[in-house]
Image 1 (cartoon, rainbow, N blue to C red):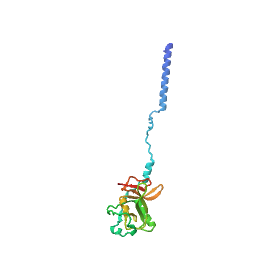
Image 2: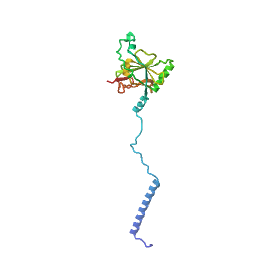
Image 3: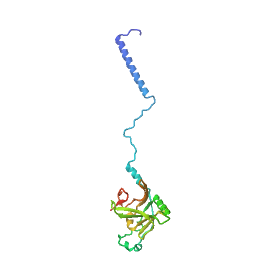
Length: 217
């Protein structure tokens, strides 16, 4: 064991010792960088899905409304009542009365509550909302909503079945263009108001203003 080693043998031993030290150092470095028992952390993919709301979704949520409830038909015009109209009204459009079973409107609960509050503030149980359809607007027809304090001979009178008073008045000419509609009270960025939320007689979503619409043919 004490025999002297030749020069080539010394070089080989130095080479093997040097390589072994490098391998040991590399192994130690790997163990320090990742302790025993640790788990590899997986980087999130660049295609991770991010949830966000677009402007279209935001406006859609603002324009949505609660379900409507079918109203009660308090009064419907008759041919006899139409004959009692003022003479100056006789030159108006011909009125085709629709059957009572087809004269239907739906009213959301919040719209009915607003109508009841309106009647109570005015101390008038007959106060309510009058809805009419007129020619005009960018799509051919437009809604006209205003306060009503009385019923005319050619008017249909609707009310919410449980929230009263909650009067909605529609004239006979407009009724054929509004039957089946949902009336709502909406709170939006520009204010609060009554509106026709859905109308099965309307084509598409109508104008962006929410007033003008096109009739289905």
